[in-house]
Length: 475
Image (cartoon, rainbow, N blue to C red; front, top):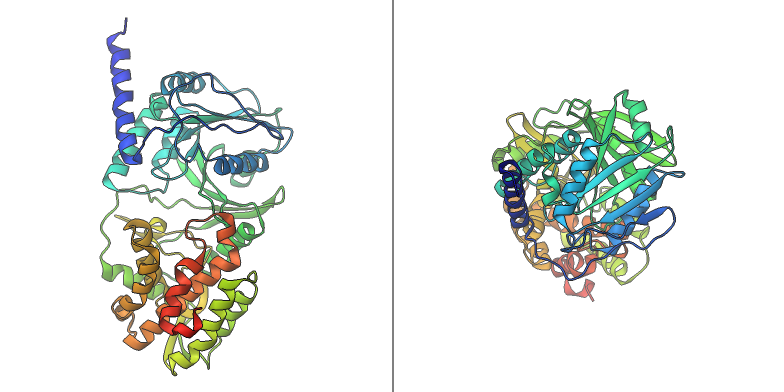
């Protein structure tokens, strides 16, 4: 017979799971997909049975990446076991048991918590650490998402999170074994636990670790470069934040670099934690433009034409470094035709964030916070940030047709760039260059080959440039 206490707990789990599924747009899948046994990674056949895991956990590519990343962060002789589980009641009981039992020396356990239409979070099984990891995750903050995050955080802290948990990861290692956690404890001089976010497929995918202290605080975030591209971007973010820390920015707050080093052949960047988990406030368009204008002035502004400046030459050099193919050839023809199309229009050149999108910023009572600076660059046309923000909102949040949105970006440019003092003619040229710059990035990074959504610029960005520059260049 259920006691009143257990009955209330079960009711709480059902309510939490209902809220979570609404936020996720959750629909049960047919069957379950578990990792094959390879190398040091073992996938335990779930004895818990029941409904399928979240879509991302049913994605073998994401699970394979999780395997490879865990093996890098907890190297041999550690043994890593991943178990996907669909019986939430059974996993709930397991979570409560893990949360109570002390870990053996060298052993670490995590649970996989589905994200809001994002890949799962890997969080510690410690109730307090799991609650903090979920609450301080810099994910979406829509009203529904905020409600679910707060509810799940409370549930995890009380041992009721099994209603939505989708799996677990156990690291078994001898006492004193080297691991990313041991390294981070040394460099931060704090007794921390980590949670991990591993994003969807893209060339620059890398683990982002949240560092949680025993007192329930987020001590920082660590980015780990695991391949040549992500390692170069980690170093680029270190350099950008070091430069910007001396720029006297007043419109935005940025993370501080706490540590950068190499561990086990990986680049590790530890950044201070911006309190982006605080309640969000509406951000007036004028304030966003002012912040982007301030950033554009870092390093100074200058005026130049396409033929008289060096921006176009640097863009063509980057494009030349990309793999040969029809997209690269078409875009190169367009860039060759741009100076004549621009007809001597003058550009204002400055700095840009490189990926200023809603998910990389938060406006709270503490002001406007902006993170993810790995794409920061100087010597680009002013206005790139505003155009990028607009396009990302249209495509990723409003779910507009990507090719149509890219074409509209040029049409909307005069209005979008008016706050920067850019005239209509220069604004349209700036938009064309922005689309070409983004296409060049995707080609150079080989995003399509990595499986990134919209990673092939030939289906949306390059045609939009061709429509403006002239039909003869897009064929």
